[in-house]
Length: 346
Image (cartoon, rainbow, N blue to C red; front, side):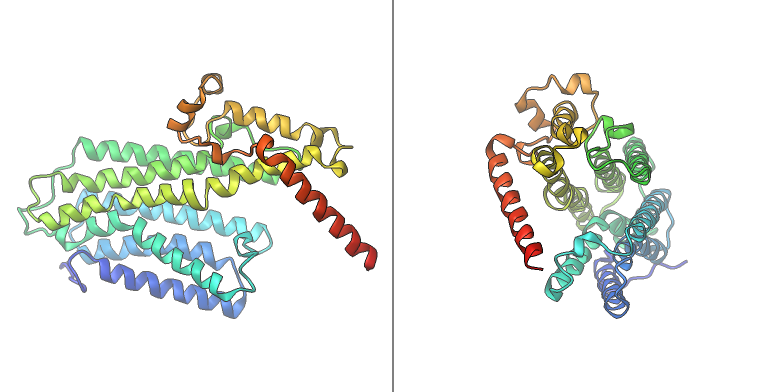
């Protein structure tokens, strides 16, 4: 199959057009049918489309390009199906849109961010499959498969399995309909408070390491593609930014701690002994469990605070009852009084 040049030799333009068009289509479908199950499916499947299109447009089918493309497609299929099933199980409503349904600009902003996410994180596979990196007439082929590629494959494999198993553990736990005072601390969740995030970050670093084999090779003489492949480090870095600083840990860690703190201190929950101990049990779990990188509990509980920071367990991920407890209790009391007055008026 002949190599196809589309817009530019790095496939940056065509992948941007495909991503924008696909997400606009998904947004229109959501608006017409009011079906929020399309959102996560559109995000995951977009990765699959970009990997498949760039691999076939490149037309050289080197081992490295095939492996990276297949890895991205496998991950994309699993992600799209898992998130689709999760939203369907929750009644077809995506809780991320609870504050956006009546604000169209926020909905548009979500899809714009999804476009940036898909295009940026796909950079390693896009560039690796492009004519600039895989043109067969360039020095008679692609760099030989080597140690760096094997390391990347191992990283991706561990990351993918870790994320998949962690998601399965939590999905099965939720299906068991545990009491509201309980939290998952079994399986991989015993060694990390976010093992699924750890797996996703690791697998994208693996993808970058494999693609980067071309950037460090003397066989490829195109300096621009080498620079571009180094810039594709934005893929795992953006994934880390997303999960560690934006929509991952910040939306799960402190809010969860706040929930159990309130549960143990609200008068309406104090009759339930499990609710009364929820906060102390959760604090003990946080104290002995790494926030991201899996570690045995008996080791992590001995870590001093500065060492926890090195392992990315920062204080702002944790609810601080000393500094924040009184304020949230006051807010909760005011909310309870307002609800009581509203019911009385009705």
